[in-house]
Length: 196
Image 1 (cartoon, rainbow, N blue to C red):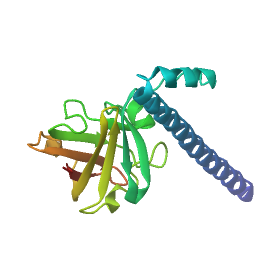
Image 2: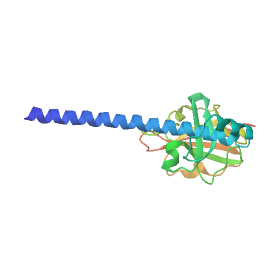
Image 3: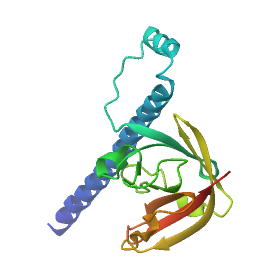
Image 4: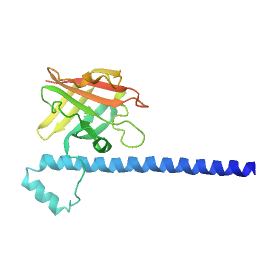
């Protein structure tokens, strides 16, 4: 009887483990698919002023409607092989699709602090999984419909979640990228300055 109970518990643990892994893989697949759609939407926004491109897209049968958060930029970090769409807001909904732009902070290329948050978790998106590997001098490129802006990393540090002053306005055109440490106890902060 004792062996039977142990076997049942073992089977339940295996089924639970397989289900959890399946859920994580499915969630990552969905997030990746949504991010690809967002990037396509971003490129469509950049080219929307061109009637030639509109006609070309419609002839190619590009009719799949994108219904996620509207992208405002594309953030590229060559050192850690990141290319992620950026949308307004930092709600769970936005961060599931993309990196999120903190409301009331500067827009890309503007004077002030352009602040962005991104996930690095196992379940959904992990766009900022390697953010902690950035060092002074690394490049962060932000593409918008108005052009590309290159920021040069200046600092990489950790703060507790209460330290919201990292989002404060700055005198120069800067970028602040925010993500959680594993376990979400603290926040990794990477700051940079717009290259002139």
